[in-house]
Image: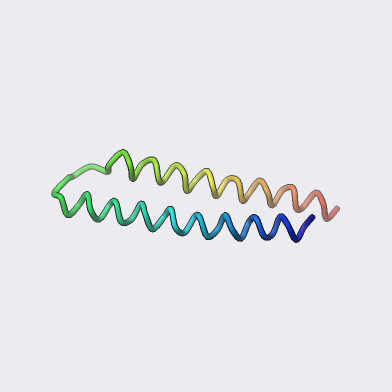
Length: 68
């Protein structure tokens, strides 16, 4: 089971990076457009990234329980 959890965590980390890249891209586009506030899309992407990070952290807890 630990191997499966590690694989899922790895996949989540890839998603975290992709979502972060999208948020940065959206922020750059917002700045280029002359806006002075973050877009709602960028804010949602940040929430998605945080949720994915939380999921990875929760999986670490499960992984620790399996080891004991």
